[in-house]
Image (cartoon, rainbow, N blue to C red; front, side, top):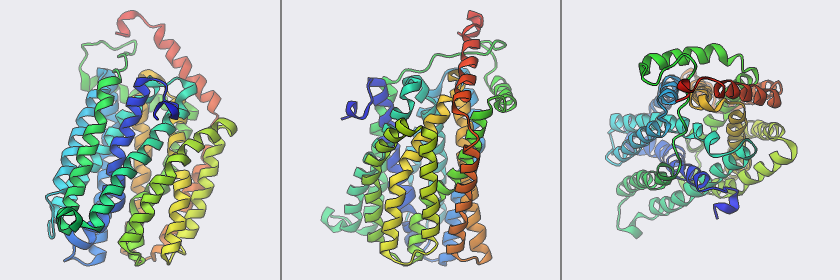
Length: 441
């Protein structure tokens, strides 16, 4: 099956399985279970407005912490040649925090929000180190296909576990459990799924060769060098003009994407849509998202990745307008299917397009800024909704305002010259190869 997806090497297949592993956290915990469970069980003694504010504030804070830490940790991982070790640490913390959610119950607001916040930071950082390995397992002409295959596997992996948890939560008595225990088992299942399917990456994907700048030494002080690298990357990033523009475009349109992902069930619950209906729609998103991600990769090969991204952004604009008028279960299903058609493809092509304009020896640093771009976008969206809730702005108007981010992102994306960006990355790599041997140890 994995070979049929275009993953031609064992390393590519092992790398892509990490998407299968950690997507369970997003489908079961972030999107489906935690928002509703927190509001209706853990924070049941609080008003819906207070519970919603606490959830949104925790989400915003966690994403902000991850965004601020990612660039320095990325530079440190590149200098030490330790991307896999950093990925392992972030994965372990995320798994343990997810397990901690199983011990929260009614009234345990601090435990639930604390564990969720830590897990959110960990999974965000893990994705930085995971994404940075993409250029080391795929050639430039394979990036779109391998990235899309990873997202497709994420849909299937996350969807399979979500389907099992959906049955568990809908009929806990079938499994000899009560409703509270079923939620705890669902959280434990996510942690185990993440741990088990992350193992192939750590066994099969080699650590990329450590590469140093001309003025660096292998035994140099790690944190001092990381700060220096970070400063140099910040100063030189604008020299990679088109990679920088891609970051800016991604910051803008990922704002809307991440806000839609994280608050879909919260918004649906506020509209009175039943839990069962929302869970079934989200499961359908996973099933439709699998072939849609692969089809987007084929579409990109025909019309270029950049044009395929424009198509995805146009669909997201329609989603925002339609969501502002949503008032029924049918409307929720229509929105879910529209998102399923473009979500995986948009994210996969954004990742691969940026990777193709990234110098391989600095990929973790660059992907840290890619994550920073995404997470600051993810901070702005929830922050907008949080402030809107506090100010009494109707949810429909707040959701509609997200369309602005897709429009602005598309305008910046139009200025990205992909060929020029790839030439700049290749020139940087050639300069490194020409450096003295002691500098590339």
